[in-house]
Amino acid sequence: MADHREMNADVDGTDAGVGADVDVDAEADVDVEAGVDVEAGVDADVDAVTHAVLAASRLLVTVSARSLATVAEQVERVTLPQYRLLAVLATHGDAKLVEVAERLGVNPSTAMRMLDRLIAVGLATRQSNPDNRRQTMLRLTPEGRRLVEQVMDARHREISAIVERLTPGQRTALVGALTAFIRAGGEPAVPGDDSEPYPLGWSDTHARH
Image (cartoon, rainbow, N blue to C red; front, top):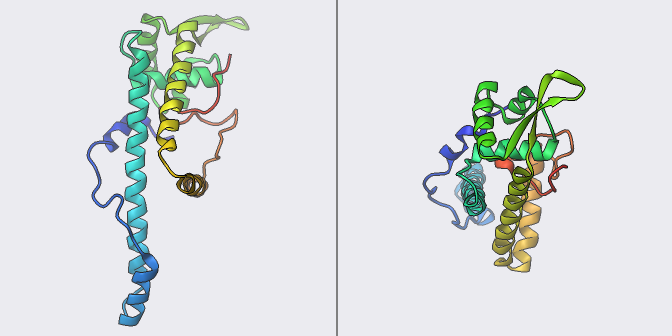
């Protein structure tokens, strides 16, 4: 599983060429008449789409950080990796440390450090497994669950505000393009109960109680 801890390394700066219009058909026609390989036009189109997707990913990471910062003012600072741990518990319920670490794609020692911080600020807790007293289960506190729900709500509101700025035609086109992109990447449009949480804790579902 890929480690999402380095995700922020991909979001600084702005790629050149984002938003540039590429008329593939027109370029292909010129290339055919000139006897030039038409694949050049296709490559340019792929490059433009790649830049656009990277720019969109930076926007989503910005929204993620901003929505967390908005509600995290009520508690001591919570980082995105720490929030992802909260989101894992909210999505999948109580779990052992090794299970949480596996879902996050980090070492158990790293997950333990994040958990210690979340316990210190009252967002998570350790409890004995009633079926096996030698096992310790990790659980959200009511405050931790409330934080996850508030962040999800804040993200939903901000994304909705951005989508509302698009025309109806642009919205329809965006749904089709994103659905095709998700399928091409081999991801389900809506993760099932046994799937991994979205990177950075993105979710369109309610927290599991």
